[in-house]
Image (tube, helix red, strand yellow):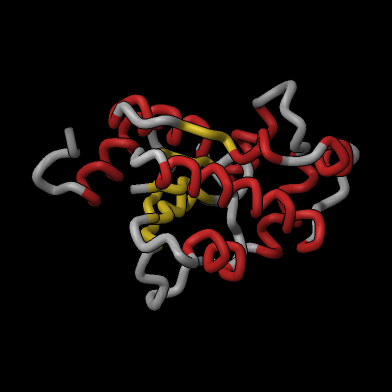
Length: 170
């Protein structure tokens, strides 16, 4: 099984993904590390990525997922996948993958982004992410939404309880 922790910058996908992977004892990857140096430079300069910029990045995410599946492993991937087309691309051919979309208010996102330092993603790009974000639709059967405005550990507990009401896999 592959769990993709998704949402806009500042929603906590890296933190929650890391904690979730640790709780499940699964490998973790942060899709931010799959961006090209050109994409990182573009974002650092305050320019939003477009679909063309994201295509190679999405392929690298799929490669990571496929490598886990081929090895017979589960894994957790933190990856924004804000548009439905991106989610569809990642989920295509991956019936055991689930996206956990972290929902966070704009006010909370602003607070989180302004308080973090040293990250390549500047707060001024938040609006661009909110503009392109397509919230998950009810027909997206492999996508679940979780409100993630509290403690990251509480969010992980919510995710585990939602996916495994009887307890997580061992």
